Length: 162
Image (tube, rainbow, N blue to C red; front, side):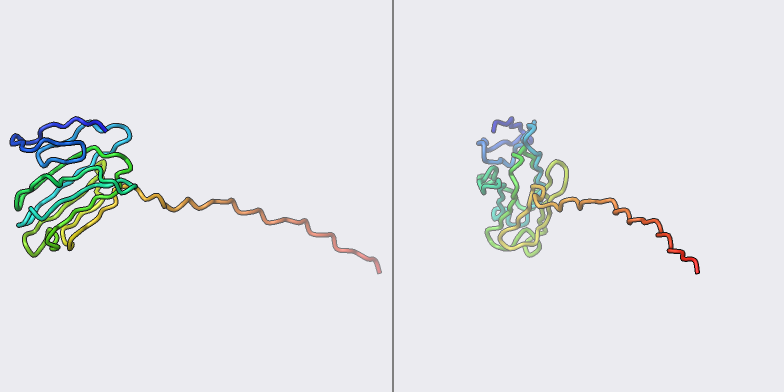
């Protein structure tokens, strides 16, 4: 995939590669077969323990922040165009205490095309969010018109003369 990276903040420190997501960059101009991913992240007192990635249906990592260092107690807003089959967001805490509430009040919210897909902060080592629509949505129930009741004309009663 080819994307256009633009500087969101003035203190650019790392240069992005196609599958790294730099803390100081924002991706723009989503293509037709892509979705706009947005992460709103409030780090805790130990932001260096936090990382995240997005994987496709084949479990390949398509976006990660592994080379980005977050600041403690920092608000981070990141947007990226992701392929429509990029279905799993996972956030990790290497100390196993999540983002909240033992060492700060960190949390995250993940959206795709403006729709919130998941949020949290209280987890151990990993929290996961499904970004894709469910492929097992219930099928519509068939609707049949009620069958017409058979209507029979009353049979003529036999009339016998005495």
